[in-house]
Image (cartoon, rainbow, N blue to C red; front, top):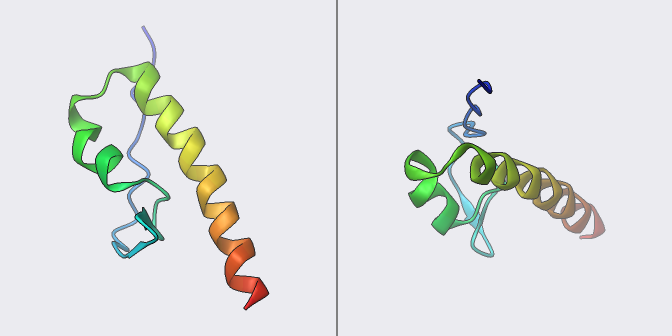
Length: 62
């Protein structure tokens, strides 16, 4: 049995361009998190990591 995917929530809930700057998830992913299957949670976390990196790069350009 696979290990549960831990929520990426950091309790820093602030949206920037529809993406949470704390965890990298979009509003839809945050809303659906509890009902997601393991594979969907894993994919969401992977996308969130990429988004957070992208947000960091954009902030540094300013």
